Image 1 (cartoon, one colour):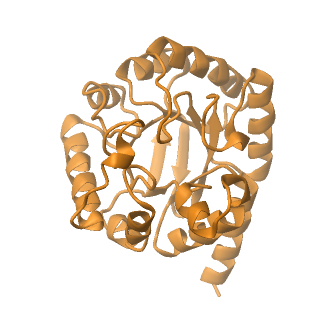
Image 2 (cartoon, rainbow, N blue to C red; image 1 turned 90 degrees about the vertical axis):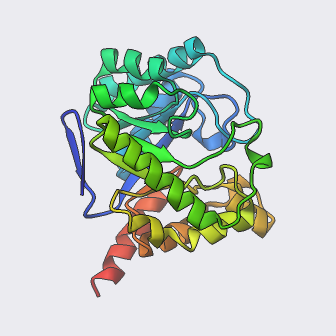
Image 3 (tube, rainbow, N blue to C red; image 1 turned 30 degrees about the vertical axis):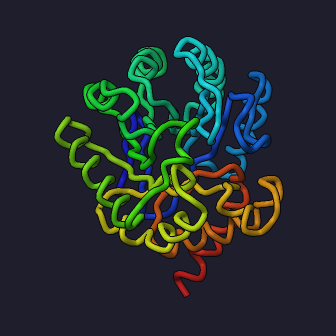
Length: 276
């Protein structure tokens, strides 16, 4: 498997690291927040030195209970950070965490190709999949329900794994019919799922890697890690690394992380043990 994004190509024969850069004041982990262009440059510089493969840039927090952000506000935030990243790190593939077709069009006109990382799988803006197909951009399909204000009240499943797999399969097929050639799947850990449901789904990652598309796992420092341990997101790096290893053992291709160095070290050791 390979991700092609403009002039960038990434083979997925080895796991890849997607590093989180948030230009939001309310993202759940303070360490990912960048308030100024100088913060962005410093964080991105560290990530590049540590071996990041993809920058994932978000300007609209999707944590449970997060505040809404206007399209104009989202574009203003994203433009400020992308000016820095494209100037200083043109060699790094970009992913934009947005659900708005207008944002994708405007940013593509200005910066060229990037991965569209849509936490709503086209549910929030029905035009987004068509725009992504027309621009021939890679597209992340993530399972969720509702919005940041309602998602944690929408956790009723008969069989969470079966329902998430069916959702992803249906959305992937719809994307292909619309003309998207590169679909990446994301189970949506933490989105409209209880802690217990997250672990049920996590134990069945292999059911999603068997679908034939690259699988992105985003669990870094999330509630499903720190809440059972009685700690905070700030203290959840060891737990994150432990589950990242388990995700790779089940065939995950991309890890979306706050801590690039820890992920790189974990992948290196996984590779060494895999070849023994």
